[in-house]
Length: 237
Ligand SMILES: [Zn+2]
Image (cartoon, rainbow, N blue to C red; front, side, top):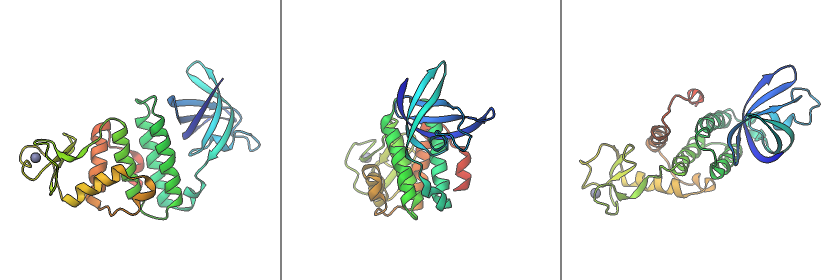
């Protein structure tokens, strides 16, 4: 028997009363869990066996599956159901992490950040695109693709004016070196904004002015490094 913190990404009906849960676990990456009897209205596993449920679980290991024996709900992000936009962004986060978690088995930092963004989406009334962009940039950094916004990729000097941001090279070319690499034109202000998004906690993202260019750029950056851009839930945003 093991104890694990999990976030439910997907629930699939199985047999008459059971569910198979796709879950993002805090220390084991993505796992599949059988939740027996959880379709019954009197099941004690009902709350922890639904999409978005974040809980502490006791799991029995059985070949390539885990069997849920007990679960204690930490949060089900109930408020997401009261705001359709928050719900769509949160659904996108689940689809994104479902893809990313397959290859990254032990990332408790990514797990904690994912739970945190869901609770922020739950508590905010707007600015979801900004929060989600912050999550995307921080996720890229945690996966090992942290862009350097301070120093020019070519001459290494401190960037002090507008320049180019190169997704492929993972950083900025200063105004003297813009001809060396391919990239997207960015103002100095946009460079500073991206850096402060990367450094700020979700609580502070609301105070940062973020334009559409940056939101688009961050998403392109992440998608380039994870190698996928066709997420179904993106169509909802
Ligand atoms: Zn330079």
